[in-house]
Length: 260
Figure 1 (cartoon, rainbow, N blue to C red):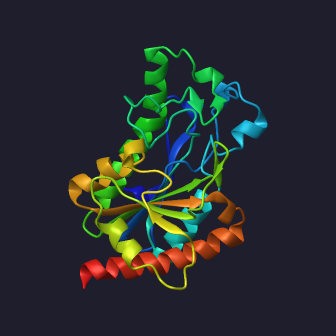
Figure 2 (figure 1 turned 120 degrees about the vertical axis):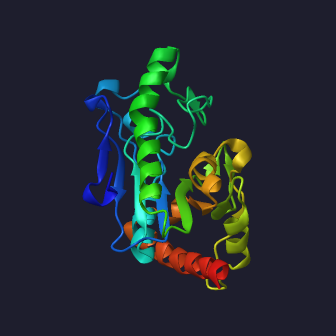
């Protein structure tokens, strides 16, 4: 399967629509950028999952701003880029099917009515039409570019306030089984970047967030890091472009430390 020839993969059930999108690099890529929670799109057959429009536009349904950063970052790094095409409320592609929050019944303080009391068959249909296409396309994209890939970067965003508590952290550098790149990146933080940057914050692997890194990168010794950006800092395309440019230089400098 040559991922340079197309940019989306549809689910086995056509009513789900595109489950994953791939944007090839212009040349042989050394970096793959992944954005699992890129969209709040819910397949029409699932309605609104019992939620109002405001809830579906909120962080519970996706990572606002993350896709814009991922796309700009990919351009700066000439990376191949993979992102999800369906809301994490339908299925969270950064979770395995057996995870309790792969299809969340609640998210933060919100109940997800359509996810309550799903049968095992219903859950399997969601996994087959959202997780499986995403997992398989990501795996195939890595395989197709394995000779040149040196690094996986996943891009996420988080809320400035969680359960009523303000978060001081502005940028999190997270890792799963392989801490090498995250710790090296923190150590190489440029003085020009004034963001409050912390390791494994506001989440860590113990929260289950390292699934993509640990399944697709760590087993093949591919350097990897998960970026968590506070979403009030990436609300506009200008903000997304600015932070992506700064991150691209920082990532490149850190990566050079592994090749020198």
